[in-house]
Length: 222
Ligand SMILES: [Zn+2]
Image (cartoon, rainbow, N blue to C red):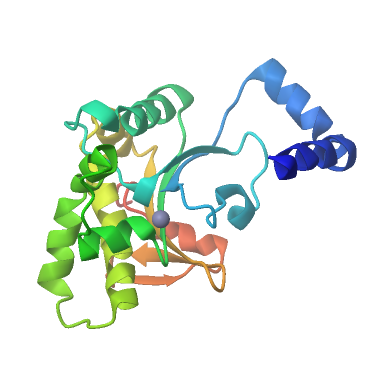
């Protein structure tokens, strides 16, 4: 906790000056984020840091394993679903990123199926991604290395996330209007590299420049 308090003081005394006008404007005018960014609760994945975003840029959802529940899921899945509806319907974000990452504990649990009976909420949450485990078993059974299996699960999981997003009426409507794009990303922790799924080649490729924005699922073909 001391680290947090010290950080708050440091931010107030050293960093806040450069953000003061921005925070003031955001308070007066409200937020208008361009992107809904769904990523893992993992402490090593910092959406704003790795995309160099400012306050007001990203509407961020962090949950265990960056799982996107289908719109039909109920119960403890509601907070992510609520954030999706609000960002797409009310805030009018133009992009939705589902960003998985390497060495993901949730994906490892999905692959190794440890006993989670003492954590029923976690067990229930991960069960939403059962189709991801099925896909890994079906397509990646040749992978013997656990790290590679976890990476495969993380990649399948963000693609599953995009499919789940499309089950939300608001998302479907915005895609049909041509005003919303969906992106599946993968963050490699050790090198801080970002990869984006390229639908035409079915591969995750390094995200290197703005032209990469064409790798989206949302916009209708022109
Ligand atoms: Zn994770």
